[in-house]
Image (cartoon, rainbow, N blue to C red; front, side, top):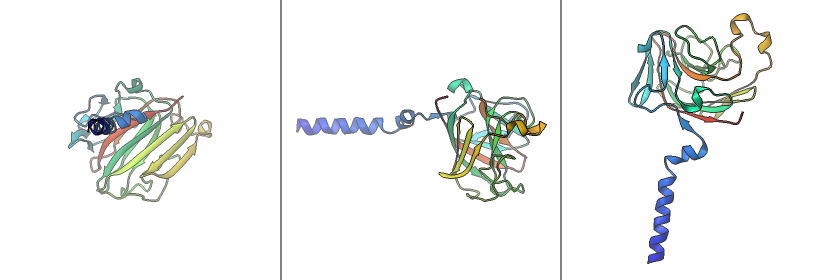
Length: 213
């Protein structure tokens, strides 16, 4: 009987340590606490972002919410990033990588990973905006899906619900037009985009796993 109790105790301990710490063991860290925007910063049109039912709600005029928290001192080079996203009909948004905070306007640094399943812009969810765009729509409005981005060296990989939709090797940055010179890999933070007042998008479970530089 004593042996059985010992085994039961060990199993209970394993179960306790295999729940929430799993993400930590795998190297994933949350960037959003699900309660407020601590660790995030927005300049102009800050009201475009709010927290509703554990998710960041994007709804309002053009604005960008930048991660400025303590993880890696908000400067990431090689990493895996993922978030659960839900778009409302006609919505347009984006996830910026390798960017930096600016008070207003469209971010001049980094790449935008598109979030758009039914907006009039034909460049759909998963596009590496204006660099490697896709026309296919892989997910539906009003449904949660996972958007994943990996940067390793000069390669960007984008997945939608575990399906690879873009693989891009940065070899042509020196040939970019002047307005695209800032779209280069280096290091930086993440940002979420409010595109226009009619676009409503929700983000939650925003996670990052830094990789070796």
